Image 1 (cartoon, rainbow, N blue to C red):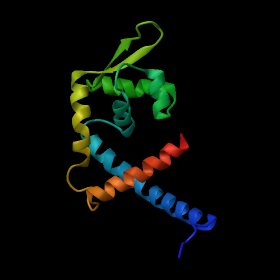
Image 2 (tube, rainbow, N blue to C red; image 1 turned 90 degrees about the horizontal axis):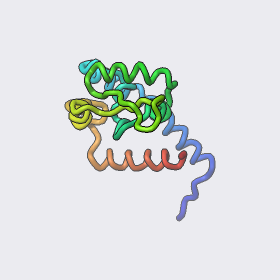
Image 3 (cartoon, one colour; image 1 turned 30 degrees about the vertical axis):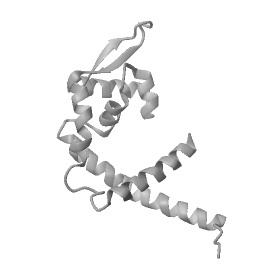
Image 4 (cartoon, helix red, strand yellow; image 1 turned 120 degrees about the vertical axis):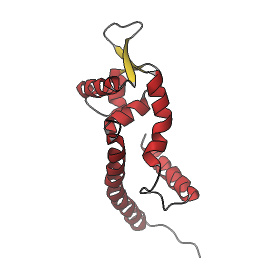
Length: 146
């Protein structure tokens, strides 16, 4: 017997998924924020640091983080004070400042994930396969929206 997903069951499943994501996301944010406090960082700082690969114009970072360009200055100031990034002039446009990881920033970026998710946390009860399945499903949903 083949079961056909109706529009109602798809909508019900999507609503249930959205409900659980709205429940889980504040828990994730609380966990990440509490761990980042030890480093004098906020969630925006962390995601900004993760977003800087090579020289990154500040305006591009604002778009990537979906924040107002004026707020990138606050984030850049904090990361610069922590010694994780530095501002450099753009090679061809003197109006643009690029954010570049420092050696300390590169080291921190490599280890921060372990520091955030070591010990007990929200996802500790999931197996590696369950985590992988959830990641794949959410990536598929996110890719569909791009």
